[in-house]
Length: 318
Ligand code: BTN
Image (cartoon, rainbow, N blue to C red; front, top):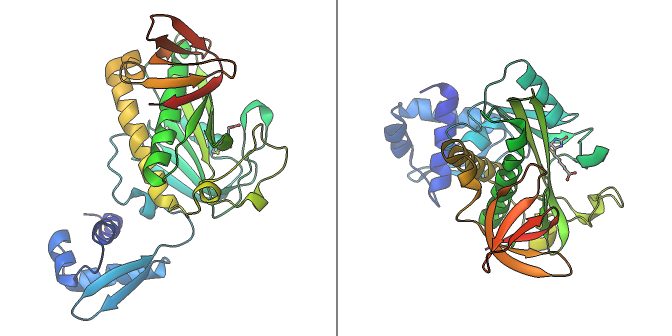
């Protein structure tokens, strides 16, 4: 195991138990000496992890560094593709811009760029995405799906479902999808997607999935009038601070699983098991997702057999 892998495994072991982990257990599980365990603990402390050491009990992780970092996110990340290359930046203009450039230079599928803060976060339709440091998640994923540009809008469905699932897993809140690109909680926007593509007529070269999730941002930090919907954060809605690294890990894992299915089953992955409730304002219905048409509309088959085309609307996963 490489040094960084040992660090990641130590953090994973700390998190999997609910108390102390003895130096002896760590040394056995990692296959390294107890002196080496101690050296790794010292190294982690120097990186900002607060680790308590109590004789006859062992070690216990008290807190992780404030800044989102690669080690923290990758510890316990069981993804096949997404996040196998993970780049964590303290600050950048836009993770989408960084990921797009890396993809142009040949970055592998699954490369993920995460930043603690963005100085020029991009929203859709030329809007600004507020990106203060230390509170939210700003993340861009490079994909190279072997599909035509027309089929690429299927990926929007995968991204919104992955974000919704990550919110459900990391909080007690019930996210709602505002098809096609927004995630709301109690009618207020908590996350947005900005997917950018480089393609030829017949073939996608790469897609950058850009995902911004307001995790621990306070309302006071939310700008007026910058966003289309009234905005919120998971902390504002749930009253509980979200562990940003754990959220990032959960999101990447969900996305990885959905994308894997998409590669194996194609459009079928965006079908079948997805039962949704749709609210178009003037009427509501439920049904089964059939896919995304080339215009980006969600196709929903109602129980009475009618096929509905949802260009934009509130969609809740059942
Ligand atoms: C929107 O709802 O308008 C889309 C917002 C997308 C924001 C994310 S944050 C990470 C990635 N980098 C960017 O510059 N934008 C996306």
